[in-house]
Each structure stands twice: as C-alpha cells, then as structure tokens.
Image 1: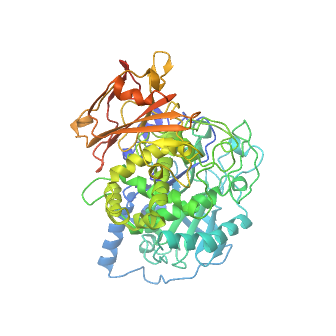
Image 2 (image 1 turned 180 degrees about the vertical axis):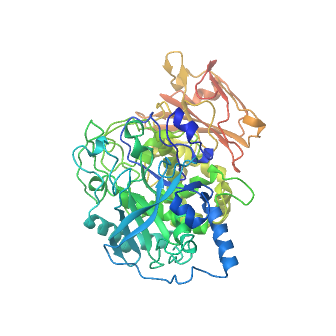
Image 3 (image 1 turned 120 degrees about the horizontal axis):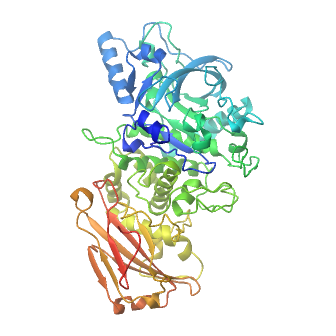
Length: 614
C-alpha cells in the first residue's frame, strides 16, 4: 500500500509531521479492534531519517529513494567504479549467518528523527533459503527490544511470545515463494532484474561496512517486528503493518528487499491455522489462513511494479495518491492468483477478506471471518483518491475498492488486462483508457466505472436465480469472482458530505418516517454544480435510480448522464411504484485526478433534502 505513517494523537502529529497527504496516518486511537493488518509500500519520494551508522555510509542524515538513486549515480560517475573496490558478487551465505540489514522505525525513536520514518541497521539471522529467496529473521538486541519481540510490558506477550518465527515456518515461506509465488508472479506480472549487492549506497561508503552481497536473483526477505505505532503503543494503535516494500531498501543494499512482520505466524500462515479468538484483544488469535503468504506476494508485486512503473507520477508533477489505486489493486490481485484469497467469502466464514468487507460496509459485523469487528471505512469511497475517508482503519476500504475494480476488469477482459496494467508506464485512468482502447475496443473508461459502481450494489442480488433486471445488461454489472453487495444502509455508504471522485454515494431514498417505497415517490430533484472545490470543473455527474424488490425478484435501473440539473416528476417515477426499496447512486467523474476532495451536490425527494450531498 502506498502507506506511511507517524504517531497517532495530536501531540505526536505536531512532533512528527506528515510528509504528504498521500502518506497520511493509517493508525489512530479511533481503531478499537484487533486489525488483520495493513500492507504498505513507500513511494520513491518518501523521506527517511538515517541512523548514525547509515548516515555515515550514505553521507547525509536524510534521504529518499529518488535522492539515493541520484547520489549513487553521481558517486559511480565521479569514481569511475560500478562498485566499491574489492566488493565482488557472492552467493547467498549459509543458513545461520548473521548480518546487518536496514530496518524501519516509523516513529523515529531509533534515529531521533524529525521526519516520521527512521532507518537503522539491525542484526538478522539467515533462517531459510531457496534458489530465489532468503529469509532473514531479526535477532539483534538494542535498548528497545530483542529480535522480533515486542517492548517489555506489551500485553500481547504476557503468556507467550507471539512473534516467534520457527525455522520450519521460514522454510515453508521460502518453499511457497520458490515453487508457487515466483512462477505465478512471473506469469501475470514480471520478473525483477538481478541485484547482487555490489552497487549499493552502503558498498560505496566506509571500508568495513555491512556486507549485502548475495545471489542477484534472490529476494532478500527481512522478517521483523516492524517498529510502527502499533509496536510502541498497542492500546492506542490497533492496526499494524503486516509487511511493506520500500525502494530505499533496494538502493541502500543493491538487493531486491521486502519486509514481513513477525507477529503471530502460528495463526496467520498455512491453509488451516489454529483458530483462537478472544474478547480480550491482547489474547485474541483468530485464524487468518495464508495471511503472510498473501502479504508476501502482494508486496512482491509492488517490488516488480517499481521497475515497470518506477515513478509515482509524471515528470514535473508532485506525487499523486490518485496513482496508488492501480498499484494497490494489482497487489491485491496477486494473492487471488495464488489461490490464497477468495474475495467472495463473507464475514460469516473464516477467510473473509477485510479489504473487501470493509469496502462493502461490513466491518462492524461480527462473524467467524471478523472476530473483532471494527469500523473500517465503507462504500462511499473514491477509487482514485487514496485515503479519502481518512487514515486509521478506513484505509482498508481503499484497498477493497481498488481490488474489487481489478477483479471487475479481470472478469470482463481477462488476466491479460491485469498484466497489461502492471506493465504499462502510464498512470491512473489515463492508463486504463489506453488499455481499454486495446482490450475493450475503445469503450469509455467512465462507462466501465459506472458499471463497476452498479456492480458493487447489485452483483449478488441480480446473480440470484430468477431475478429480472431491467434497464441495464446483467453481464455489465456482475462479477464471476466477487458476488458483491453493498451494505447501503451502513453509515459510511453516503455519510460524508459530497460525492467521492470516481466513487459513488449509495443513498436509500428517505421520507419523514424512514425509507421510501417506490409508490411513495412524488418528485426528485438533483443539482450537481459545474465546478467543485477550488472552482475545478466537473466533467460529468451521473445519477442512477435503482429499484429493488427482493420478494418479487425484480430490479430496475434508470441512468441519467450529465445530470447537473435533473428534475423528475411523479409520472417519471411511476415505474418505480412496484419496488420496496429505491436507491440513488450518485457519482462524479474525474479522469485526470483534478479533484482533491469530495464534490457537494443536493438530492431532494418529495421536497425533503436527502443525506450525503452537502
């Protein structure tokens, strides 16, 4: 995920400012349940504060991946050397070898940093390896903790250390990557170029610096208890980073590097782990099958994508969170390709995907797949604005939206479309339109978005046997893999003021005494301004009215394009009379990411202003 975070809480935020809204804080005291974890990657322009040891090697106290790449190029050019003299390619060392590798301290306590992300050197022990992967597990001790353990006094360790990663578990992950994930990733995405550790920043520094050399075709996997806000203050930060990819690690080491968290491998690896939920979140250990395998292949897509689409935005433009959704959606496809994830599983069953059920509006519904319910965003979510609902656990809905859209594209255009998105150097919806010209015979990207928005609401309903759908072709708004159904009565289906760019409000029409049936509709007026915040022009307002009669197995859809000013009379609304429920799906189109926030509108039914618009 294009995540990065500082401390939660007002005091901490003043001390640890955010670099960019695209890197907003996904952690907060507002999160009240044990979260399955977020998955993070850091963009090329994320700034890191270096520990004294790393600062001595790099020659500066702070650095981003982009800056590190320039620094490395300059040093190579000035020295005339491709690597430090005497540093030669080497094979992966033997299991049991101890080495220093970079580690992340998001709070910055290790490096006393002003930026929110600290990097420091940490001892790891090689615990398992195969031809194309090596698993290094944190083993060193400093004044904060030892190895993968939590700090002293953490409630999660009162009975046993939940961060122990056994050699058998490490080898199982190595085997899983070598035999399954690598072939799948190479087929659907790409293959990482070799990096053998001879040209990294560290190797150009002081003699006697850390040795990062190894088989250039091997992925260095660092298993660590990531020092995020959850690590330091679990009571107020229930969400943890389950894994991340940061290009800066590759630059420092000249290796392909990923980090996986060490927490609770016993219940989060394998196809059938133990299921031990508890009302006490310090002790709760619900089964989350293949979690870390999924995290790994998710992050590996990020690593590969950093080569096929290395810059987060066009040259000369600042980093745009609008571009994250393709990268994150692709990474969420990876576990599905590997058979680890089934996005159709609901919260009532073990294996439910939090990204999906949070986006659909079921985060607060308790079930076997959601043992510790929590608010985590919902359907009112922009596809192209990352973290538009805020940080905290709301970020899970961003993932779910992006993943659902990728599944929708996969169902309609095949896996070749997903592979093309991974390899395409263009950005955002512009990239999508270019590929639709090829795979969709020129279909408009907006039409695909509008079908997707209806699919989220109606897929499971209209896919049921015997349901009659009027107003749109069923094939356009259904998914073979999702069986989606928005919880349109959820508070996050339309609660925030305005429409999310390239998202949708799902507003059940209301009267003085609650939901209105179709027979009660007398008038409807919609007003969508021609410009949004900052006087940015609106490309298009799209309003769909959806009538649902579950008992009669009937669904009616009426669509109104360019609905800047829409007025419907009782006669216009008469065809909705047989339907028990009527929902307005309101969306605003934004091809180039011009709108940085929600766009206000007004929806009035029977002279009563509806929620969601302003």
